Structures are given as structure tokens and as C-alpha cells.
Length: 439
Ligand SMILES: Nc1nc2c(ncn2[C@@H]2O[C@H](COP(=O)(O)OP(=O)(O)OP(=O)(O)O)[C@@H](O)[C@H]2O)c(=O)[nH]1
Ligand SMILES: [Mg+2]
Figure (cartoon, rainbow, N blue to C red):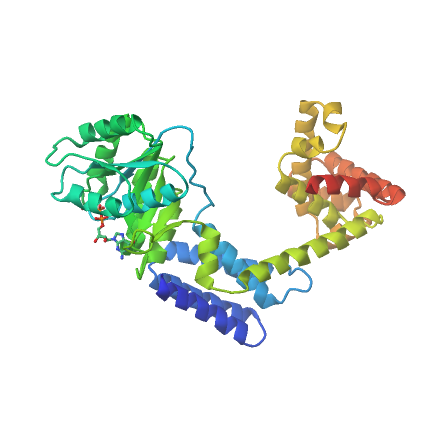
């Protein structure tokens, strides 16, 4: 699947890994190779440029976790950034306890009927009872095609030959399956439209069936042209998902996926062949992992994590032995931000959250935010050696960060206080709190 893109990406990585030392020129060469591979897969030029700039910047700017070879770090960045442009991880979950209606839409020949059968198969395997409604009253032979596909997988089909009104058939089908033990009803619709305007109108007409999920089926062979369909759909059905089909051998498949994800719509499934089992639940990170086919990509990611934890432990030792720098303080604030709100963190510390009023917490969160900006305005030397801060330096930082000098002084006094508390308790309290946070 996506063999062109796969080959291009793997070659770029191979060249980097097999080459000499990684200097700026090697990174630039690597990024060029990436660009070529992505453009050939019909990924939008702007997207390619943004992605390559990001990869280049991160590669040159990020500090390596100690012990991680630069090449591995670059592969990790590539993996993360490629996954990111394919959207967030989503889950397509349906209740076993109530009836859910799934409506499939898409322009002519996009693969709706095939996906209807694939999805019916996939959901049946998960233990759902599925019924399928053939609401394509437009194309002759549509119902026969659907029945043939569903017969193989033993899923019942509701439909009427020579029916004219698709909305009527759809509601009759829903009514019918509600009297059976089916808990999922999939409606296959007509693809009489060649472009999105008419299609969206029909979707709106079918909307009064109150579908639980609306899926837009897009033919992946059209590449980045997917964008306009996905965008129009995302505007009217942001809760829906997208299925990209025919990704087997589609030279432009990479562009199709990237374009659909760029609209903010979620890609939930991909079709990877004509057989009824050729359906995959879409996960950006898993997909990219396979695309790069680093058999040891997972091992690499695990190793990076280990090294990061090791680096954290060293930092922690420095903090708890009373040698905390402003950089460490910044790191702590960032860690807290990553974990969510302060309230959530303080909930983990017994007695803390109840002792603190919400409005005080809000104030504290604001303060943390100011501290981040203050620290960003300090020079590297100042962060390493905060004793350097005299009044003229404080004045400069205040101007640079747009915060009053008073706040900078306050932050410095809190910093000193924390440092001495850490030293006195040898970090016991801090370690306990960190432990609780990680649970
Ligand atoms: N190679 C490949 N072919 C596919 C895939 N999905 C669908 N097809 C083929 O694409 C053609 C159109 O598929 P359908 O499922 O009939 O498309 P549709 O959207 O229902 O078409 P209309 O009802 O006419 O609008 C068929 O020949 C399918 O076999 C896929 O993932 N890979
Ligand atoms: Mg069809």
C-alpha cells in the first residue's frame, strides 16, 4: 500500500542512517528527499513545505536526550511530524446496548457499497448484529451488488427493486431493522453526484433519519483533490468521519490522506483492496510506523522514552539536592502544563486542593503563565546562574516579558525559597508528589 511514498520515505531514511555524520547539510539533504517523496505522492505543496520546515527546525534546534544518536532523533521527529499531519487518533465505537444508524455518503463510484459490506463485516466480527439498507434507488443493479456482497458475509439487506424514493426506503429499512435484533443499521446511499454540492444536499435530506454516524467515503486515487470534499463535509457534519478508499496501489494516496486530515475531519477507516476484509481502522501513528517500516521504530521510541526518563531523574536529583536552576523551574512548569490544570495536579496532593480556593488556583495558574514568559525573556547564563540578576537585568527582563518588575522579584524569591526547602527536606516532599503524579 502506498508503495511509492513508502519507498521514497524509506530511501530518505536509509540514506541518512547510512551516511556520515549528521551536519546541517545532511539534514537539508534529508529534508529535500522527504519533500520529493511527499510531492510525488501528491501531498499539497504548502503542507510539504510546512512539514519540512518543522522537521528541519526541530532537528537543528532540539536538544538530544543524552545518549540518543542524532540519526535516531531525526527518525523520531519524522515519525511524529508525519503522524501529526494525519490527524489525531480517534476511536470508532458503537454501543452494544442501543441501535445505531450509520449513514454512508460519497460521490459516484467512491466505494460506498464496498465499504458498507466491509464495515458490516468488521462490526459483525466485533459481536454487533448488523443490518444493511440499500437506499441507492438511482443506479440500476445497485441493490443486486449490495445483496451479493452481503450474502457472502451473511448480513441481512433491506431494499426494494424499482423503488424511487431513497429517503422513504431508508426510513422503511430503519423501521424494519428496529423490529429485529440488529443493533447497527448501515445505510448505503446513491452516488449520483459527481461533485460535492448535490451530494451535501442529499445528505441533508437523509439527515432527518438522525444517523448516529455519518461517514463520507472518498476515493483515495484523486489525491489532494480530496480536500474540497472533506472540507465541505466537515463543515456540515463535524461529528462524522471520513473513509478513504482504494489506497492499495494509489500513487496519490498519501496526498489524499494528508488533504482530508488537513480539513480537521477525522479519518476513521481506510479501504485497502477489493475484498471484503480489506478495511483498516485508521490510526495515524500506526499507519506512519508501517509506512516507515522501521522494524525497530517501536524499540527506538521506547529507548527515547527511557533516555528521557533518565534525563528527568538526573534533573530531579539536581532539584532535590538544592541545586535547582531556573531552567529546572521552567521544566517543572512545562511538565505541569503537560499534565493539565493545576487543580488536577493539586488534587493528587492530599489536603492541598481542599485548602485552596478555586479563585486562588486561577490566580496561581495565571502566575505560572507569567513565570514562563519571564523565564523565556532571561538569557541562558541568567537561567543557569540567577544570582546575576541585578536591577538593570531585572529591568530588561520586565520590558522584554511585559511583566512588572515586582513579579520578577517575587518569582525569584519563590525560587530561592523552593530551592532551600528542597535542600532541607532533601527533596522528600517533592519526590513524593512526583510519584503520586505518575500514578
Ligand atoms: N482496488 C480497490 N478497489 C475498490 C476499493 N473499494 C472499492 N473498490 C472498487 O471501486 C468500484 C466502485 O465501488 P463501489 O463500492 O461500487 O462504489 P459506490 O460508491 O458504491 O459507487 P456508486 O454506488 O455507483 O456511487 C468497484 O469496482 C469496487 O470494487 C478498494 O479499497 N480498493
Ligand atoms: Mg454503490
